[in-house]
Each structure stands twice: as C-alpha cells, then as structure tokens.
Image (cartoon, rainbow, N blue to C red; front, side, top):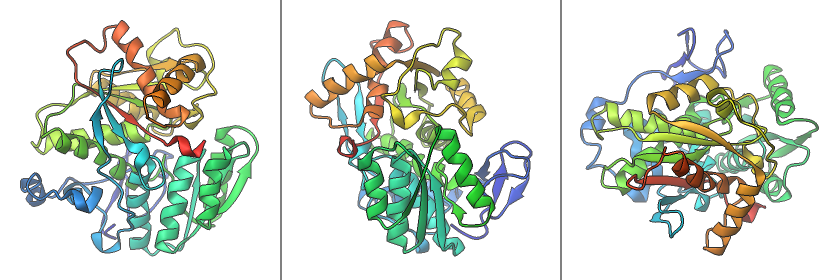
Length: 363
C-alpha cells in the first residue's frame, strides 16, 4: 500500500496514515476514489491470470509490495436443483476460504509499511489466511484463537509458523485479549474486522462476479454475516463499479446469521430466536462495523435473517451429496434461499449468487 494512502474515520472524519482504529473508537476506511484513468480502461485491462490483483484500478496497495498466492478468480457455476442459483466457489482459495482475498491486500499493506510482526484474532479461517500470507511475506505472526477452535483450522496456522495463543471464554474475549496485545505494541493489527485493507480484498468478489457475468450484475447475493467481512466487501465492490459507471445497478444484499448470534437480524426483525452452534465461523454478537452493515442493507433494499442449527445441518448434508465439500458455516447461506423465497424477498425470476465461503477439509 502506498505510504501516502490515507485512512478516514467512518464516524468523525479524522484521517491517518497508519492506525488500526480512530481515536474516537470507530473503524477506519481507505479514503479517496479509484483512479479515473484506470477505470476508463478497466474492462479491457483485466487478466484472470493475475488473479484478483488485475483489479488494481480499485486497489490502493502497491503492486511492488504485493504478497500473493494466486488468489482470486474462483469458479462461478450454476448450482443444480433445488438451489436454482449461481455458486461462487470461494472454498477453493489457497487456504480454503474467501479470507485469502483480504489476507493478500492486508499483508501487502503491511510489507509496504515496513511491518515486521503481524497480530490477528480469529475463529479459524482468517487466522489461517493471515498466518499463511505472513509466512509468504517472511513476517512474524501471532494469532489469538478460541480455546475450542477446530483442529483442522489451528493446524494450518501452526504449520505456517505462526504463534497460536488460545483464549478461554467467548469469541469477544479472544478479540479483547488480542487488542490488549496490540495496544501494548506487540505487533501490527491485521484484523479482518478492523483493518480497512481487508475489505479492499473482499471487494474483489464483486469485480470478479461482474466480469464472469459479462458485466451483468445479479439481482441478489446471499451471504453469511459475522463481522460482515464478505458482505461489506461485496457492497463496496459493487458500489465502486456502479459509481465508476462500469455497471448499471446494485444487487440486493441478503445476509444470514446464526440464531443466538444475530445482532443484525435482530435489529431488522423482532422475532429472532433459537440457537445455532453449527455455523461456528460467524458467532459474532458485536460486529465492529454493525452500522455499516445495516447501511449496506438499506442502500441495496436488502435484508438479514437468522437460521437455527437444524437448517444448516440439513443443508450441509445436501451440499456434500452434490459434490460441494464445504464447512458448516458455508451451508448457512444456501440454507437461507428457501426462507427468502417463502417470504418473497427472492422471486422465481431473480438471478441469485451464493458464495460458498470455506472448505470442509478444515473440519
């Protein structure tokens, strides 16, 4: 990332060169707009062989410092009945989840800034991605994880050479301990929830989908929502394309949360209840960017609902039988298709995309 790139507070409008959150406590975003000269030739300059870095018109990171493992341009294919949608196979990414999109941009930013030690907190996939890309960059890395993290996920972190610190208690307790370490100046915070460069990476999902669909935007996307890393990335990506005149509309963004961990769905619907410990990757009760997620839903005429464990387990079994070997959290988005159709949010004529976010090999 260019050292001249500015970070702007989403609340009070202060700007910084390098800080993990604003003095007022709000998250930061990358300031500025895409280079008009680059966006003018955007459609003709895309080379899938360059992976997501071909979308540099919308990336602030410097290509000279990029840390890449060939991420991006995951397959997009028509899902068989009963889904009647398009699946975007994010689980075939280098470390097995969409988090690689954010890891490449965050680690590239870190290298550009001369960072030597990376710190992150994660329930699994983000930690695996950050640790792996830190290894690629030759940086020291410490990942804070829940004490009960799944072995397949923590092994990826450890084998990348990162230090793993297990924290007892809630997912929020993991973040709190990690932030204490960051504030004690033990490392640079590569947070998938706080770091604005991570969202530049996840925004490339939107650019790829538009490219793979010959610049036609789908009517809706259905995505899991924890911290909203993919949800907000998709919104920012489609918004950037629309504002640059590359595409003609925004898709409706439809979120899905685990019952019992559903702050966004609870904000929108009064009858959210139940529990869901199956979709463990989105067990977030206090998302850092909650207001931004709600704003993205409002701006796209979207929605967010919560599902219980039974629906996810049933969907996971069906996905596996049809050859989509994903982890449980990935099943929550396709499981939401039926309730969204029942309530009329998705109609029979709508073109819908569902990203399958993480690999079953980790579980």
